[in-house]
Structures are given as C-alpha cells and as structure tokens.
Length: 97
Length: 17
Image 1 (cartoon, one colour):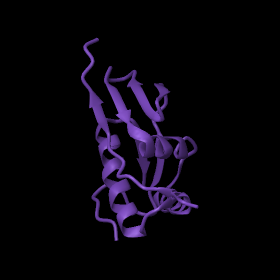
Image 2 (cartoon, one colour):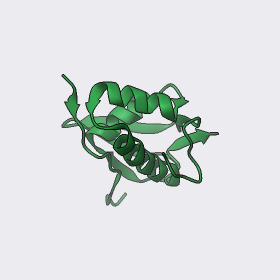
Image 3 (tube, chains in turn orange, green):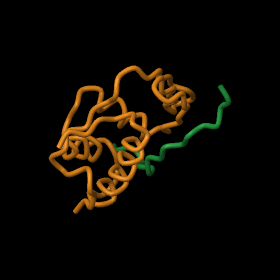
C-alpha cells in the first residue's frame, strides 16, 4: 500500500512542459527551463518520464512497469512513489488527484 | 523475458550556468 500525502493510486501523473530532455548513454538527462537545473533521471527514471508524456494514473504507470520489469508490486509502488515525489518537489511533474 | 529492475533515482547535476 502506498503511503503519501500527495500521490494516491488514483492520482494522474503528467509532465510539466518546457523541459529540454536528452538521452545520454541510456540515461535521461533534463534541463528544467523554469529553474535552470540539470537532472539525471537515470534509466528507469527515463522510462517513467516517457510513460507520463501522456498523463496517466499512478496505478496504470505501475501496471506498465510490472509488465516490463522483474519487480514485485510493493517494491515498485514504493520506489516509484518516492521518485515521483522528488520530481514533484522539483516541479517537473504535475499531480492531479 | 522481463528486464532487471533498478530503483529510479533523481540526481540533481551540479552544473554552473
């Protein structure tokens, strides 16, 4: 069960537009135009970033990842939740509850 | 065949602009 003040299984997750994104050696690197910071989302983070190009629910995102990766649901939910909360804190994703 | 999972992490790169 996920435990977050801001994100639930029904939450819709989407990208904030206007970031410059590039693939570097299999990892996703991003420049946020709004805050001028550079980020490395890593490989799995890049997959998640691509998946939320079209906004989708947290549960749909997890289902997609479980279909593609060898990981149990609880681990996947908790780790993706933590990752999304970091993205939210940096204001590079949008969450609609 | 499913791919190996790694915990997704956000790294803030220290690049002086």
